[in-house]
Image (cartoon, rainbow, N blue to C red; front, side, top):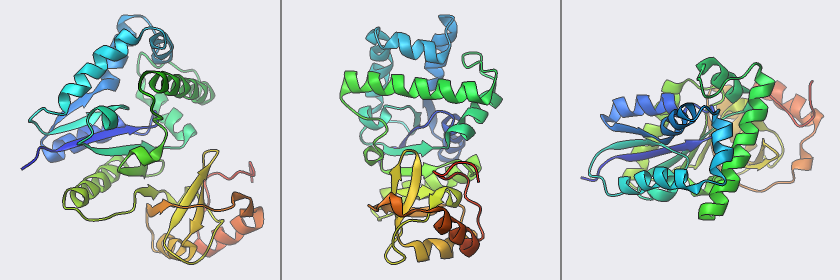
Length: 271
């Protein structure tokens, strides 16, 4: 029987550390976290995590040390939950998961964690720092490895954690891991209903497209609406294409009345 290897990448503040601990307990697996390693390095060097990320742009030896540890995990004969933005790349046999979350919600979570290496005075400051840190990481990983860590197609499963408890997130990841290991098909994405904007076709299977941080329904609106009315916390979808200009204030109002859900954020600003 093959060893369990689940890798967790995702947005800063998406809950990777918390969910990783839950999964490690469920699968009786070891937890390996490069985030913990980086925060320790930042504290030892008297830096914030953003400052360390910017420093690492011109000091690749730190990435090299961390990445050598990741590479070694591919052939480790142990069960592992790997909390790392690059594990999908360096441990290709792992069930790779991307955990995403709204930027403001992520910022609030990071502030509440009270980490020494992530000191923020306001949510707005945290949002800016998170954005700058992610840009720094994308530049660094693109330069070093020629990969785009924000390309969701790199991952076997993508889950939106914005409005879902860590225990539920872990439950969904575990369920999809078991589907994956048994060779069963599943939709790559699960998105919180309050982040799905009405836009595309009523017919077909649920599909979505992303633009500027907003997620638009490309097809399957009828099935999605039914799932929302039935109380689904997450909507399973695949990627599709649609003209996002078709999403209007009027269409959003009709969607909210139809589904009974209040959308968290829209491209039309405060409502």
